[in-house]
Length: 418
Image (cartoon, rainbow, N blue to C red; front, top):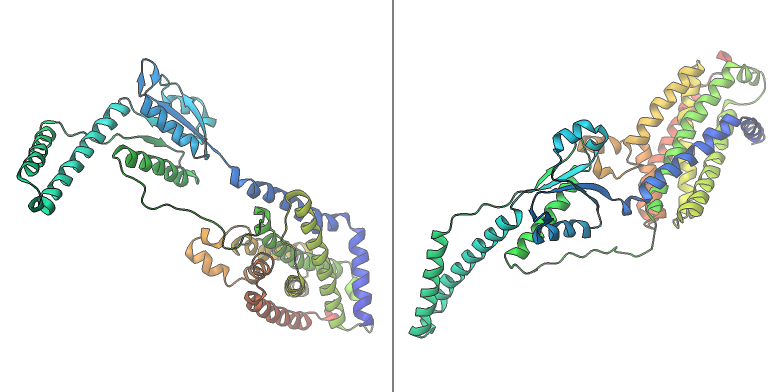
């Protein structure tokens, strides 16, 4: 234990002397926390600019129906409505203003109100005729002759009128979006919902099924609370793999490890000293990120004893990977590159920064083979869902992962070659 403590304290002192080490260990993760936190925390109030070009005018002013439709779009709270002059040629305007092409454009055609109302009248008439037919068939035998005659004459009159009236096609509203716009499906979905509500209103359909939503358990958590466990897990993983790899490689290059080989210090003490130093950094990083999250975003999901235990196991597991890389690769630049090549793809493929459901099926399968997936999933189960039982598998997987790689690190670290 004395050897482990000596290595641990020496590594901590050396790390504190390195300004770049402190930056990449703490300030860089905090900067990313602030960036991602500001982006995702504001997602609830996000508004998308929607340009509307309304050709359905009456004496230079929007018709009542087109104005009501625009008002319905605005009431969703999703759009920032901006109007385009009908005199503008949209195609030419987009070509002349390249920045404009990032916006979405909705075009209401000329005659929208007249065509829509005629279509509504035609559909309502058809519904009335069908209803009268049903009444005759189902209740005719219970009616007086006079009532049956009145209903029959009314149905025939409406049928004759409908036959004599030209068929009116539905109005078409055009939505133009930029190619590759990831928000376009959502924009079109909201516009379609508004149009569908308009259709129901115009044909007199009443609301039958309502949709309401509420959380199963109300805890008043902020959006940043849900992302913070993923950030903590990701940066502990990055610090463990990249930090340990760079440290070991640098000590090999400057001859520090070679001098240690001449001492009675066992390899296991050297490896465990590095592992415990990275574990200390992991707890410090967690405290700093939780502190900044609380001060800036008001997070309330704080780690308990179970979460801290999982953080310890995760830090040991990922640091042991760095120890293996540092023991195998002698060149500092190559070792650092290898660490980054493992850490950063794992960071973005594991679902730590966004829900796994957003990724294609094959990437979801890959994610579940990555240890970081179990690390951040276990932290979320503890910190957000308050269910440590769901973290038993992450504890087990990360624990086995740590034992395997520490054993490998002991095997590949050879004093005589250093």
